Length: 320
Image (cartoon, rainbow, N blue to C red):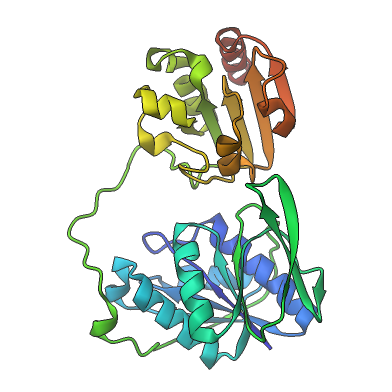
């Protein structure tokens, strides 16, 4: 019995998220008495592909086709479905990111499968198949029973540890049988952000809210982010006021992130904001209002003036 995991690559390289997905898939395959097949779509060299075997993949299907660079959902879902059928996969796992959330419903329809999005843990049972996911924007957990023979899961980042193995995977070329007519998206221009840490990739995120009182006060947060190699973020009121760009807005209506460490400076903690950051492993809140809702979600809290705390943190990091 096979577990298929779709591993995205970025400019021919895998990131931690892909290895986390394979580790999670390997743990499920072990419980089911099966193996893991990783599917890579795009131009990735064999040395990079072999890294997926280090986290539990027994076989790697490689689709080297420049047409997929458009990230066309119709073509990608057809290719993943073809791989799932070829491997007789009973569980298909994707990342719970923008691409995974777009592909998973299409796959579920193509494979007549049950779908659970935002999975956060290994299944608690396999007969019946029961898996945990977040509900109510991270305020609660739901245990979902999937009765369909085939299951499609989108997995929340940072919900499972990386598990390295000494496994050697077999790399095979795979033809998903996709025609030119399956590609409806044409990329006219690509503009990439350079010189800064992307929020969706950042292990540490420094975020500011209305308590920063203005965009001109962001210098301390920028310095702290540089020292820690962190990504810079903000709450929605900050981007709405024009203090920071909308590309830095995290929350339910902005970017959904899951860093290892999230600093919230002057952020009250509205439920819409927490919905986008609740998957962070550790949340540190700094706010002068001891009744701020953010403290209910935080692992560590500092009740104090952000303009006094930030310089002290910077000095402490420099000493370290």
